Structure formats: structure tokens, C-alpha cells
Length: 382
Ligand SMILES: Nc1ncnc2c1ncn2[C@@H]1O[C@H](COP(=O)(O)OP(=O)(O)OP(=O)(O)O)[C@@H](O)[C@H]1O
Image 1 (tube, helix red, strand yellow):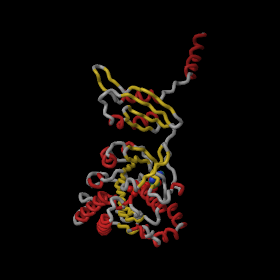
Image 2 (cartoon, protein in one colour; image 1 turned 60 degrees about the horizontal axis):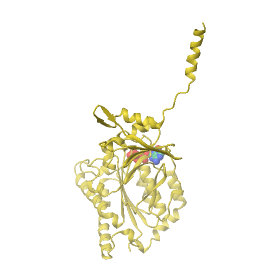
Image 3 (tube, rainbow, N blue to C red; image 1 turned 90 degrees about the horizontal axis):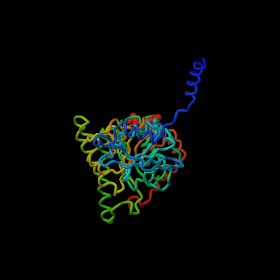
Image 4 (tube, rainbow, N blue to C red; image 1 turned 120 degrees about the vertical axis):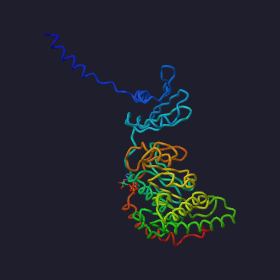
């Protein structure tokens, strides 16, 4: 009888024993093993070996030594498995050792733009927040930017955020040409802003707009050559001309039909010229596309753009076109989440801005915005 009574007590007792929590270290090791990230040697498998672990307030760093012969790409392919397994944000780097940073807090899914982010007089704009803080992109250091990612994940918001920051930071010196190839739907109403020189809404208007820019570019090239200027950033010339293209694929001769093909060829050649020599002359190209293919992003444009940003990509191949790297296909499906690449990939959350915020601020500064153009200094064209 006593035994019968003891049995449920043992079961209840077992249920009360707390389950041992699996550590992140153990989870990562299990993922290496389950995904076979290792090297087969004789009858066994050699996996990355934990060499050191550091902890600080924001993240833990795990350093692994690798058996010779594991390609670094192997870890990019299991990054999403580690993120899901740990349910935490991570970064992977190679620096002789494999370095996995596991963050204690997740990136916010949304953060709103405020004017505190402005940097008056500078060509820097807030590009996003990562675990280390707010990152700024400096258009005088990296003049052009290539942006990709599937539709509805934040390209338009990013363009607006860049536009607004530049306008507010450099009212007197900035000018914009916008190729809004989605029929002028998003940026058509920006033409009222005096710093916006022109908005084109189809391939024909874009051809005209780009031929004006190319003529102007040749003039600037001549005048800078006469003065023996090699790069605008080292001269007293303050003016910068931004050319924003959304959606770049609409200018691809392989995508458009009939007569439009010859216009598309011209537009792609003009954009290539701007990317190739425009940077030193003060032109800044922001080329956006949701169809990152070789046809949509001309080789010369891509090769001359160091700064890349990709929202979630449809496939590895699309990520490679934008970033020259895989990874954007595995981003979580959070609007505004992106990989920003200058030399290395950084996962960021782009600040959120909407027309209501932008236009109410612009209205508040209406006089300053208008007068900034009227008062443009002779240093513009020098
Ligand atoms: N940085 C962001 N933070 C939070 N939410 C965002 C962010 N960017 C975009 N979103 C959300 O995603 C929606 C779609 O964004 P957006 O219009 O910029 O996408 P898109 O990629 O330009 O799409 P399309 O190609 O259709 O124009 C926005 O209306 C907003 O709700």
C-alpha cells in the first residue's frame, strides 16, 4: 500500500524538478552539429571549437577556432538557424577566429524619426540603428548608394528619410532630381519644394532629365578641370546634386518594350556616367530597385557604388546583386530592417518617417526653405 502511495509522489516530485536551461553556448554547438558545419576526418566530424567567451552588458561574444577547410560562407548559411535557435539577434564576423556576438536585447521593430537626428551643415544622414547605436551615412565620403529589397519593406520610407535629412541639413546647398518611375505617385508632389529641380514620372521624362544632368556634368567637369580641382569635397564649392532613382528596373532595356528600349539604353548609360565620374563633381546617385538583377542594375552603376543597403531580399541571388553577399534573404520580415554595407555588413533598423511629420516640419520652416534657395551663394558654381 505504501508503495502505491509513493508512486504519484515520485511523479509529482519529478515534475517539480526545474528543467535545466540550455545555454546559448550549447545551443550554438548543437546547431553546428545538426547542420554539419564541420569537416569530416576519417570516421568523425570536426566542429568549430569554443576558444573563449566574453560578456558585457550588451552582448556575449563567442570565439571559435575552426578546423582548416571550412569556408566562411558556411556560417552565413546557418546564421538564421542560430538566430531562430537562440531567439536573439546575432552578428557573425571572421577575424582569424569565428566570432559570434549574441545580443541580450533585440533591435526595435520600429523607431521614429525626430529632428534630433539632424546634423546641420553636414552631408550625414541617419541610416539606422544597430546594437551599438545610431549609424550615419556620409554622402561626402561615400557619394552614391545602391538600395534593394522586396516591395513593402521600406525603400520609399528610406528615400523620404534621406531626402528630408539632406534638405534640413543643407537647405542652401542641396538640389534634387527625382526619377519616380512608379508614375510619379510618391514624389510628384515634391516639385513645390524649391530644392527639388525636377521630378520625372516615366522613361521619356527621365531621358530629358538625365540629358540635362549630363550636359551640366560635362560643364562642371570642364570648369573643375580648369581650376585643377580633382574632388569637390576638397574645394570651396558647397553645392551637391542628388539624383534619386526609384524604381531603377524601369530603365532596363531588357525589361521595357518597343521604342522605350533606346530611351532605356540612354538612361542606363547616363546613370553609369554619373556613378563613374559624378561623385568627384558633386553628384550623388541613390539607385533603388525591388528587382535586383544584372539587367536592372547596370554593371558600371554597381561597380562604382561602395555603399549598399538591402531590405529583405527575395532570394540569395538578389542579395548578392545588392550586397555582393548573401544574407538579406534571411532578414526577419520586419519593415525597415535592412543590411547596410560599407566594407562590412551591419544589420540595422531604419528610422520611420511619414509625410505628415515631414510636411508639418517643412511648413514650420517654409520661409527658411524658400529663402535658402533665393540666397544661394556664388560658391555654388564657383
Ligand atoms: N523604417 C520603417 N520602420 C517601420 N515601418 C516601416 C519602415 N519602413 C516602412 N515601414 C512600413 O512598411 C510600409 C511600406 O513601406 P514602403 O512604402 O517604404 O515600402 P516600399 O518598399 O517602398 O514599397 P513599394 O515598393 O511598394 O513602394 C510602410 O507604410 C510602413 O508601414
